[in-house]
Image 1 (cartoon, rainbow, N blue to C red):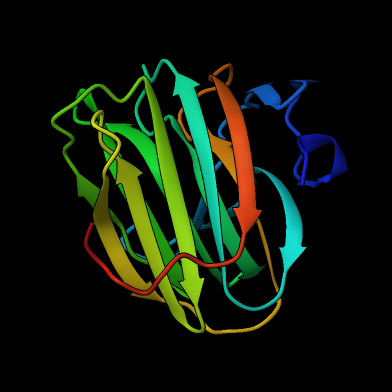
Image 2 (image 1 turned 120 degrees about the vertical axis):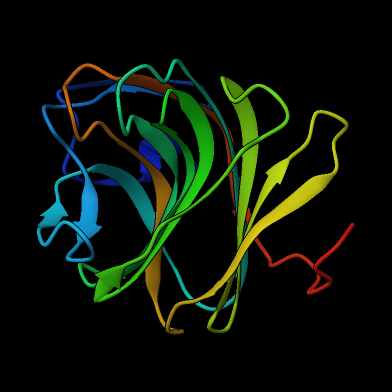
Length: 189
């Protein structure tokens, strides 16, 4: 699958595709979130996706400068506006964390501090039936598990997402996107 063959949910104000690279700049106050803690529902983030059925593994390399509160870029798996997962880098408390939000009507949020730079990294999202595994690649090439969670099985959309809940103008680049058969169910390298 190439970025050129994918479909936008909430297209950004500007984006460009060059070979296997997508660069986008976010619109004003964009986000994906439902209810928990804040009480609001936002479904305005930028999501470039294609349809998947069954088990799969998706990977992408992301490059960005995270500067404003909640700037974020990563992968998203979406059944509909009430059931989805987004995972990637998110800027909070003055630094970039690895972040995962799983939403089953209500969003949850987990963050993991990374012991390496977050300005360019590769991440992976795997689906095995209703189990969702999120991993980030370490500089030595091995994968670190950051989240194992639940999302109802069924046809869905997978792809890349970016949001800037507190501003406009966050720029992120996505490279070498792949989506294919699910990796082995073994959780650890």
